[in-house]
Image 1 (tube, helix red, strand yellow):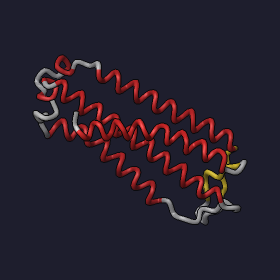
Image 2 (cartoon, rainbow, N blue to C red):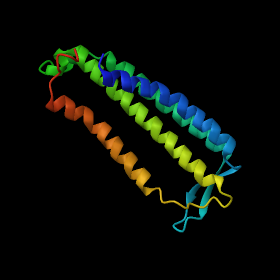
Image 3 (tube, rainbow, N blue to C red):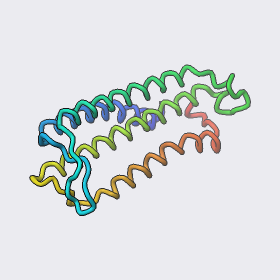
Image 4 (cartoon, rainbow, N blue to C red):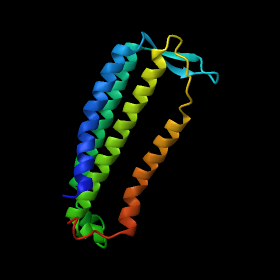
Length: 169
């Protein structure tokens, strides 16, 4: 097993409970009405009930992780040599499966970790009495989008422009 496979598998397994604990802590620290939208001047103008936010968030997190793990398991069962017999990666199915597992683990872990930081930022905003948006979080959205694009495009670029190495097999 490669170090990246072990790292991303561990990160994925740690990120899910960390996300659940962060959501539970946020539930207890949020006010009854959670500010989820702000005007351009930073004043809150959109609220959601704390319990609604908790249950919707928990549902989205569970469904997202469940669906991606189910997709990961189904992709593992595919016979890529039958789908594309000319592919060098398909001929080395062990290396391809390890690459796909690592990619799915990295994708799930990144999204879970991003949601943890988003919940922490939302908790920070809602701790103040007036729930005013005092820090510009545009950088956070842009960084998350950039990381997501890197992860998404890593797999096709790796499959198209590299060959499986002997140490991955």
